Image (cartoon, rainbow, N blue to C red):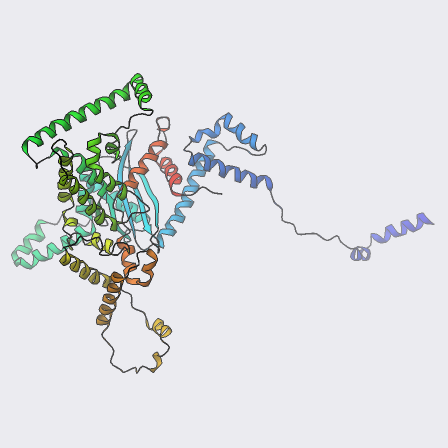
Length: 550
């Protein structure tokens, strides 16, 4: 009976009715995770970060010792080949720079530093970008380190700068481009900057007003070749640090003041001292025995001057020389502090430097020559920064207003006895602040004034210009009288704050360009000189622009 019943049950379970009634096991919707793929992706990103941040050659991933290191840490990890790593560098570069473009699109004002660097028989145009947040914290990034082929002429420089700015869509946002005093850069901006273009238009307008009809016909015939090249650069600023370095080097060769005997003795002593120091530096640099002897005697190696490190001569030279040039070295340190320095620091730093040099000159001694050096540097400062020392409200307008709109300076940095200049700068500030004034619109006025509905619509209203002028003047005067000296205090003065953010966006120095060259030299080492231009740029910019991934 039992086998018959079992057979009957088996036949029933095969029927459609039994299958419909059968209870199915519940399926839990757990996600399927490919742990091997996730681990491999993380490993590749860590290897990419290691190679970029430590500036390793890409071929390291093909090295057996490196492969054993990675697999020894995790037996399931695999090391990609050099070709795959190269593609990852390019992909990461494109991704990060797309994000940078979005960031720059939200910035109102920025400045740039530019320079040309040469190594391994190749030249590169370097461009860094800097901007301020609402609380005046400085942010920086590198826009380009592109190959520059051919002669470094002013027109080629202008063309490349213009293309880079346009590729990031920042041409109309750059307040200033800071470069050194190289003649090619100076001429590029003298010919192609927006200020030069405006000046040419004004000059042409003045000439046309004075021309007769016959002259106008000749003018049209004589200048058909002056077509618009489409190259327009932002306004230019010369690097203050490089200018100070020129004062410390070139101006010492032009000692023109002081007693003739002292001047002659100083020139001879300076020349002899420099010659002896250079002989020692060269001997130590070329001889291992001499270098070891110096290290045993001093406990360290000698500091040697470097042309692109503008304080290195001060750090390496004689006691009396150091005493005389210490104020200028102090100014260089102040102006090269990228994250803590604004254009508004330039005028106060230069005035303080001049005062300290003057103190050295006044305390001159018959037995020393330090005062002659200080006097020469003082004259150099006056010659190269005349517009700032004269507080010229036309030629130094940007620098003066940048200083006044920094809460810790305001008008406190102007020396006593210059009340007329103080009043001129105050008037200039009020006039320029009108360009930054943003009146409240009707919607905002109705929100802040609960009684606005009681005002008659046909009542006489004050003229908008008069209202704006009064509001700006009152805000500026309140700001100047306010004893607060913190950035947070600018919140109460929105017009002054807007002006301060724009005017203090530029850096007084192009030192960031020199720092970039140091890293570029570490990447383009002799054994890596075969790197392509594109890959070299990608490696340097990934190294300096972005934080390592977690």
